[in-house]
Amino acid sequence: MPPLPEILAQLNADMRATDDWGDVAAYIPQLASVDPAQFGIAITTADGEVFTAGDADTPFSVQSITKVFTLAIALGRSGDQLWKRVGREPSGRAFNSIVQLEAEQGRPRNPFINAGAIVTTDEVLTGREPRETLAEILQFVRAAASDDDIHINETVAASETAHGHRNFALAHFLASCGNLNNPPEKTLGTYFHHCAIDMSARQLAMAGRFLIETDKLPRMILPPRIRRLNALMLTCGHYDGSGDFAYRVGLPAKSGVGGGILAIVPGRASIAVWSPGLNRYGNSKKGTQAMARLAREMGWSIF
Ligand code: GLU
Image 1 (cartoon, rainbow, N blue to C red):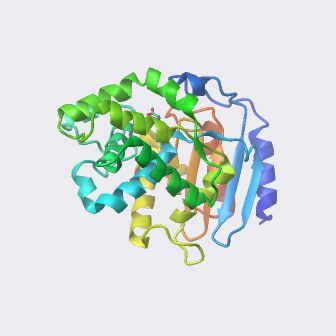
Image 2: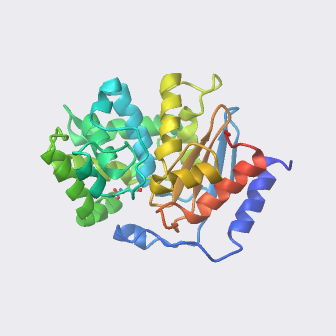
Image 3: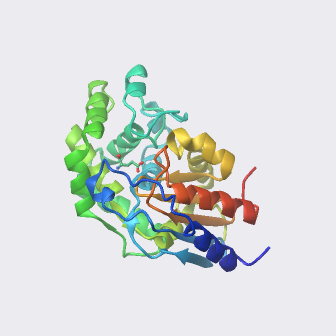
């Protein structure tokens, strides 16, 4: 097998060789203006090595990938109580689906679809102000990445707030079912802001290290919880494309509509890939292709 830097260099070249980049998310105007023809990848290993290729230092909107960090904080705060408010099953529906929430009386299927992440944000927010909650989430992400140069992009947050009609619908429906502790606007303001964190692929791969589960790295959460977060990422991390991603890549992973994907190779590595053009499930098109090829070439599938 060629060394990892060579594999990444070839992957980067091959991803740029074709023009089928996919479509950027249009429902958040600030994301719609991003050039889809970009690709970056970064890997951090349990041994502390970092390998990158392409646009690995370009900051992008990590969006739903932040749901993993918020969930880790919510579980740390509330433990299994959280599961009274949100389930642990794949949804088989789009990330922002409304219909399932009504059919299931306001208990979202899992913490990674929007309705579920609004609930976990609400849980973390309860008893605090949005400013403190966002500071706690940012602090967790920065500590995980060992990098203080990670920030919320206020322009993206404002853009989503102005156009987040579906998320407002979900939050108000949750409130009508008694599954929101805070006013919808307050919870959503916090949710939109943590989704608007900018990170580069290098920073994201670093931030994912806490999910690798190894004695070689400082521990941020307990091992049983690491395993459970990985299980949820595998089964629910790519919305209604989760089964296909597990089939093609075979790694726990979480995607975001900014075109990022964070994948974990248990015990071995954290991988972040970014390419803003999305496939029909709303997951990075080239990012998914790159993850599939990397996992195959490295023999990293967990199956
Ligand atoms: N902030 C986005 C939304 O709520 C997150 C969706 C995603 O990244 O998949 O629509």
